[in-house]
Length: 451
Length: 147
Image (tube, rainbow over all chains, first blue to last red; front, top):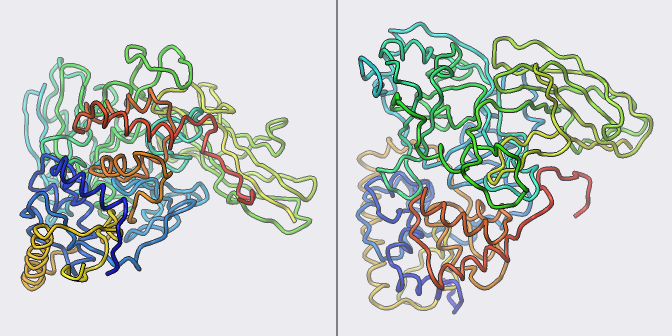
């Protein structure tokens, strides 16, 4: 093993000397204030598994302040520093997904991979805020607690949930609250989603309303608060990763569900299995994965992800990039109207002389429906209306098709623009800047080259 | 450094390949740890090996050298990767006051140790210079542009 003097190790050694606890946290995957699950539950686990030939037990006994060199990997196996998109390599997931972050694991679906009427599981985007919990050994024994401002608080297993309530299957869009964030200028904080923090799957489960009715929500119960089994990245087991909720009228909508299946398959762990919430039309973070508890509250929930500028947008428009006044923010509820072109893919080269191009796409609008979709091949100087399908059920997306005629060979941009049922269309640019970039829904724009 | 067993040069996101000699005490500790881990792994594989079915997602290895070479890079990198990968940091582009607010947010919301004094300045200096406020949105890129 070649060794030479270098800055990296010196500074690491220095950091151990200065702050052994935090440096150990950095190098081991323990959080500072390590919990029992801090190490074993960490994403580092997978790497450890590879290095040690299996899942590493007893990691929690590793003394602080020791460089865990045993987790070493051969330098030769190191992927080169990535330039351009990093593609996902995860069991059961399409390699075309683009990784936005690995810890926590976040990956988006390029628009051209959203070309199916129902988004297959392997193409569905991934958004985690913490560490993936361990896979449930016995999913039907998974327990969810309903408590707070209810007359009959209770716990129910997933098995009981399946047998005691009437199941339903709906195809609905799930969309990350930050979808479209990368279109903001100046850059907004957070994962730089293009339009790929969205997908439309068939969800099977029971109505949240039916479960809440069993609990008997008191008149004082005006807001839900959702909790889950994932672990905070710091390793602090007492810290919820994220806990959001919704106003009671939203929770009582018949399409809000506690679900255990996705496209007819048991809900995969990476998508929140064995059981999660689906609160369609609103930021995906309300659709708590690995659901363990719904706490009915007598006031607006104030869990992590509910306050400050998280999942909030400015009430009075603010100067882009300026300091935010938290008093000027409201919770983002319905997601804005959006359309995407799913075929052809941006970057497609067409044979010289090609004049007719068939377009396919999707559109959706949070709580609303899409009234029309238009496309332009001349940077918005003229538009033509696409053929738009009806949603199968509320919160389903609406697929659209059209043909465009290109007048010559050369470089063309094709833009799409949806209009919602209240008449709002997508803007040219991401509007209403806010520090964390919610609500960015400009036209979708692809480029093709003829010849 | 012949007394350190040849066990590879890195563990998942921290590069040790440019290491200076470890202290004898630390080297001994590492050897003991290695022994403990190899025994533990063997025992584990024999007894409950079939349980290890967690999807084998391996985060890409990150190292500070991937990021702009400016003062404070190592300090910033190792401070942030205690909880999350550095790519999350590097995809941002913010003014100093927003980076400052982000550090506060990390402490208030995510339990990051409070950064103060010189350490805070070092890290803020790096963040501001390496990932400055960007007026251009990143979201759309011309696929035909030769870079």
